[in-house]
Image (cartoon, rainbow, N blue to C red; front, side, top):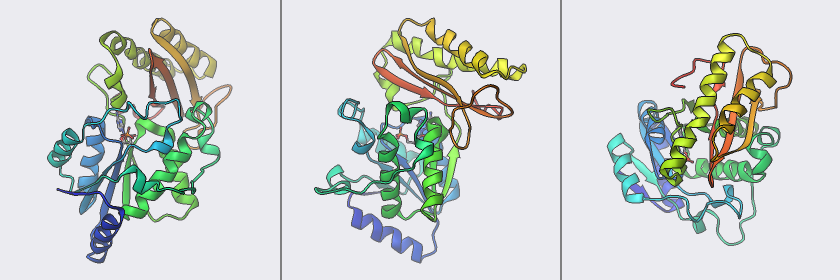
Length: 287
Ligand code: AMP
């Protein structure tokens, strides 16, 4: 497994691979890897001749009051996990190479960024779209693999790729959960044992809403109120939003849902912000 830090070296490496006709698969991450990340890498391993994983904590997707400084990191551990899963190249650039002095270009994906996480994190998806566009220009992948744990992010990237005519296939993979149902996240590391228990309220809410939906409930208020009720029984939980959204354009749904709807939950458990985003009406994967 190669580790490449410099952008120019990554580009040269990928250009050579393209000349050889190799299919390059990219899995972008911010590191502190878990089974959710590894599931994307396994998929990339299957689909690409060469699997590149990037590890970069992207400062532009954090607001000044967010957890950039304390975001968990352990590159040695990540490196071992990536080697184990068959990553060929780790792209590990430095922040001041990605955003050198004088940097001023950003990618804004309009409507699909506005609802849900965009309401409380207004510059988040601008940071995500910008770094993903830059990673595509550095790694030159044919395909890139993302997790539906960050469902809105997948839709933002799909839209960016379409609108900017980027020649990269985007693949969205199922949410990977802990055995008790909590969606895996690097931020779960922040939870103390009491909070870890309280964090399960999101999954409990999902199961109850799913059951209601499967039994025919289609009134949005009835579905979201039930989820809110379940989460509110947890003293440590503070709801940021519980919404049903259109699974393609992420618009908020009103009235009744029909066949498919994104159930989007964002909650603080203590100081830790957690999200979960299953789609009602689809095979519920492992939800
Ligand atoms: P992050 O390191 O949090 O930026 O995540 C890197 C990629 O892994 C993103 O595409 C995430 O959506 C994906 N990911 C994170 N957690 C999970 C999970 N529990 N299941 C599936 N994909 C995930």
